[in-house]
Every structure is written in C-alpha cells, then in structure tokens.
Image 1 (spheres, one colour):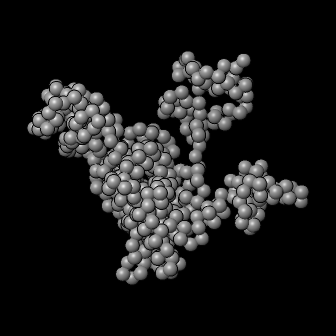
Image 2 (cartoon, one colour):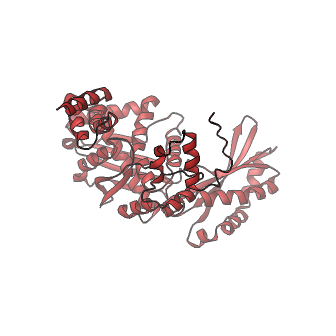
Image 3 (cartoon, rainbow, N blue to C red):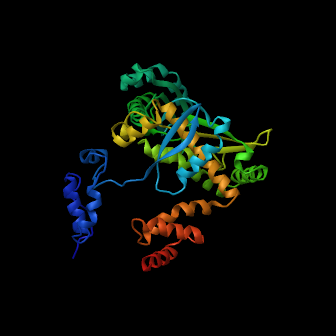
Length: 423
C-alpha cells in the first residue's frame, strides 16, 4: 500500500532529482508526469534550490509587456507577470486613451519602512513610553551598528514612535523603528534591527519583549499616480457619468470596494511579481491601507474635471526594492527591471502605481459599458480552446468560433473542435 504520509525525512537534504523521484513514487511511479518540473527555463537549476526550500521545479507564469505607458513624461514598456487574461490588454488600452493628456503623473513619499517591537507585561505603559523616547540616541546607535552599510549609503533609522495599544491582556507598548531602507524592500534589515533593539528595551522598561518584525502596512512609503482621460477617448459624457457612479459604489460599499481593489492589484501584483518583489506584502499593505478609515474603501478616487473629462488618482503603500532578495538574483526579474529602466525603488514604485490606476480605469470602463465579461471572455477563449483539447492552429480557430457565437465555455469549445476536425 502506498504511504501517503506527508512526513518525508531527509527530503530537504536530498538533491532536486532525488526529490522528483520521491514525488514520482508518490504518484504511483509516473515520472513522465513530472517531466515539466525538470525544465527550469531561464533559471539555473542550482539557483532554484537556493531560492526556496524543498525545491522540485518552477511554476512558470506568463510574462507580457504593457505598451502605451507614459509615466512622468517617459515612454516605457512595463513587464507584467500574470496568468489572468485581459489584465495586460486593459493596461495597454487605458494607457493609450490618456496619452494626449500626458499619461500618468506620480509622486513618492519616500522609502521609510517600519519595524515593530512588541513589549508586554508593563504595569505603567506610559512611563515605559517616556523612557524609550528619552533614549532615542542609544537606539539609533544600536540600529546603525546593526547595518553600517545602510547607514554609510545614507539610510538608517529616521524616527522612533512608541504606541500604546489596548489589547485583551492589557495595554501593550509597541515601538516603531522607522528606517530609510533606500532601494531595498528592507524586511531583513529592519527585522534584524528590531531583534537587536528588543532586549535593550526590555532591560530599560522591565517589559517582556515578544514580536520583533516589520509592518507590511507601509504607510510611510505611499506612492500616488494621477491621470486625465478626455471624455471623447472614453465614449462621451454618458460613459464618464457611468464610470463615476461605478466608482461611487466602491466608496459606499465594501463588497464592491473589495472587487474594485482586486482589479487594481491585478495590475500592481503583475509588476511586483515580474520584478521579483513580494506580492503578498504589497497586497496585505494595500488592503490594510484601504481599511484605515474604519470601513474598507477604494484605493482610487475619480472625479469629473471642469472640462467634462475623467480624472483619476491612486494612493497606496508600495514597499518595493531593486536590491536584495529574489530581485537581485533572479535573472528574469533583473531583465524586467532593465526593460523598465527602474534604477531605484522610487522609480519602480511610481511605475507600479501608474499601472494600478490604468488597470482600475480599464475595469471601470468595461463595467460601465459592455460589462466585464465581453472583453475578458474574448481573450479567455484561447485558454478554453486549449482546455477542450485544441492544439496548434486549432486553438485560434476554435477560439474564433467561440467569440463569434458569444458563448465561451468548454462545452462549446468541444463542439467547435469536433466540428473542425470533422471537416
């Protein structure tokens, strides 16, 4: 009887070939099914083993280019990694429609990252807060010593915040180390600082130090983008009005706001992934930021200009980097940064925010006119054709039939494929 236990002693120490053999045994000896995992593509097999634990292969994600983008006066191509149809097309189309007004204009708040140190068990939290704030120079010296290279480059600790946070067990003291991490996302740097500072804070205050880690609510790294779409490029005043009403629902209703922001993150996360950055951190921070008022709301704001055109803005935290982590060692991420011309975390953040705004415009316009499914399913038709068994030239022929009939489903694709093969 095949052992289905997830306990695999020695798996982490095995070579990747050995791991694939173990997995093949688990699948009943079907090594052929794992042949795809033995093709790391442009990534060196040795690097795969070093990027993550227990590596067995790579999971390729389609990589495409968003065209038509103008960001702060610069023409650019934007690499986007996504498995979802219509995302890149929406950005291309949206960017094309605002080129006459200069494209996207952005601003950047800076590269400040927050690390938190949680202090528990204090009988007098307010006194502890005062103690900590009075010793900022000592805390700064510890942080500078922890990462002297960052300090030499002009980064390092910028500020200390001490928050009193009411909790079920009593008031906790939470110390924020606000660190300028320059062109790095900064997680490793600030986490190490928090771990070095924590026992010192405990010694001063008598507290029990617990969590010592960055916050992904990167509200000191806000990036903003804005653009104006002429009414005639959208479809006229009626479409402008419809889009504004759609955006208004996102402001009033968290059920709509969640989907509204998901669409924004379709674009943002695709750029983040393509450049080897942390998609989960960016998504967590964006959604937390969207809920800071007490009700979850949209990351964008839309209004009608005096001329009757549509103006959009986006504001979201973007903790991105171009050095460190996978961004530095992943060859495709490095190529994507080169294509972007992103020579700083600031530049990458500005471009990413612009893509998020473009994606939101595209979704709003689709919803306000033909509905989201018409364009999405038309682009999705090839995927459905492949699922139905079409190969080679059959794929586009079946997809064209689905688009013509307006019914994009696997059942319809099977019918179309059968008819095609029967001649």
